[in-house]
Length: 221
Image (cartoon, rainbow, N blue to C red; front, side, top):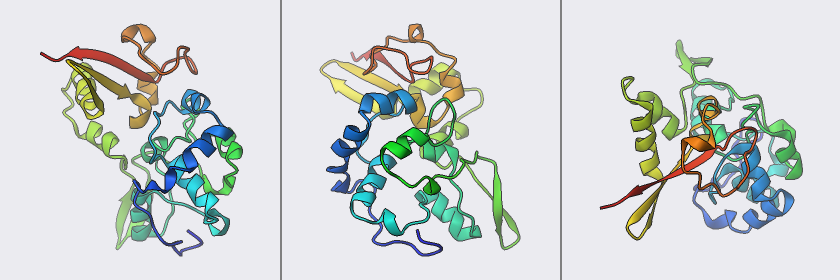
């Protein structure tokens, strides 16, 4: 956005324009380093690639802000631009230790730092609409689903439910993958160690003291 004006067109998040951006991003900062900093698995639609595609097309040159869709909807309600934590962490640019946008990633990719404000947590009141408070929720869908699940649900069963959304089939065995970073529960992830799971991480070494991506096997009868 430039001021209160949207910079159009607005692309669908699965638009193929990110294809050429991915190798360029990884040339500037290898994926292993990105993963170590953020704990986020590679997805071609991650915000990091969207923004790099915008930069390559010259769209960032006129922008003074950007908003993920949930934040944009909040903005339309109250006129306040806010970056919510759970949504931001899925984009591949939030440091898993600090819980804020990683300046080294931003600088490596040549993004203006001014586009990346301090993140705000769910529950923060950011404005009002017709006398009603506008409150940030956990705007990423998985984070909201986790919050909305039963309080009596055990962590193991909750974890399994999340894992099912990341299923890859290999013959008679399914690889169930839980990416803690993608649901933005870094403090929970830090309490686990590689010994908690059969670690099939892409990387063989711990990052910032824990392995953010855990995988385990479940046989399919």
